[in-house]
Length: 173
Image 1: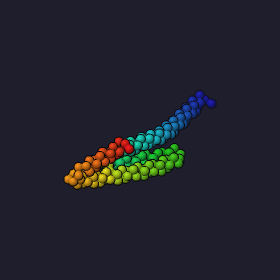
Image 2 (image 1 turned 30 degrees about the vertical axis):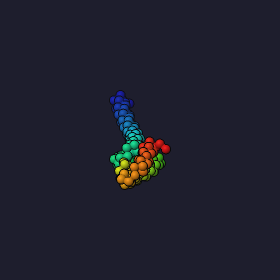
Image 3 (image 1 turned 180 degrees about the horizontal axis):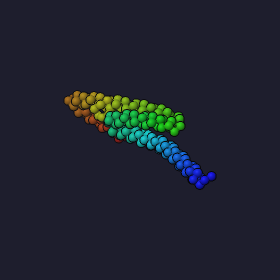
Image 4 (image 1 turned 90 degrees about the vertical axis):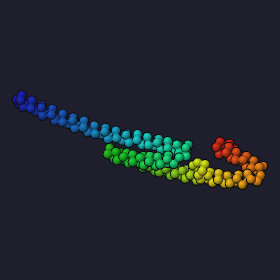
């Protein structure tokens, strides 16, 4: 065999090995990219769940309906992120039951939060709404009717109101 033929064979083998290395590198890079997408999806879900808890706590502390709207928006965002996670998991060849379980748990969480919102609305989000508002209007009517008739009875009603506020605001039994 001539040196020229040997060099040509070596060159062809070298080119083929370089092409196979390029394909292997490309495949590895693609797999790493898909796995990075899964990690990004999981981090997005963690962030969304933390935001859900934040909106829940803000509603509980401030009794403002804007936090329920934020909660609903965040719930939709976390559901979308879970769907992206399922798609990305399928792309890397995994089908897990955990995303479905998480969706079910979040549905229960949303249901319980909405129940709390309804109860808080019924009680009254501020002193003029709900049962608080009705109670306030009723007692103001009683005070107005008593003012004109009996000062001792008015004193007792005002003492009752003071005890009521101590209980409602300070939870002092």
